Amino acid sequence: MTMDPEKKMAELEAQALKIIELARKKGAQRVYVSASYGNSSRISYEKNDFNLATSHEGSGFGLTVHVDQKSGSASMNRLDPESVEATVSDAIGMAKFSIPDEYLAMAKAAEYPVLPS
Image (cartoon, rainbow, N blue to C red; front, side, top):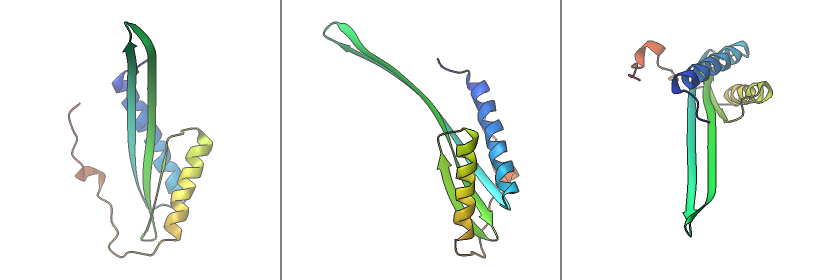
């Protein structure tokens, strides 16, 4: 069953905000989160008959964190609390072991254009 796009967008945004909050609690000074959502359906017709019908729906998140001018990234497609916690911890851990970059920066939210629906 396909979800209403506006409802799905609101859910993705709410989850992204939770990921940002968790990353900041774990020590990230800056956090960038991207969300993706996809839905596909397939129907196969062979020998005058439908023989296969499948449907797939999925979403995922990618995040980049900055800790002390160092960057770490991770992605996830499981959104249960344990997986989110582990993925955020992985990104923070990668950042802590990265080489500092004095030019590391992240665009401010206001610099991204708002696209029409």
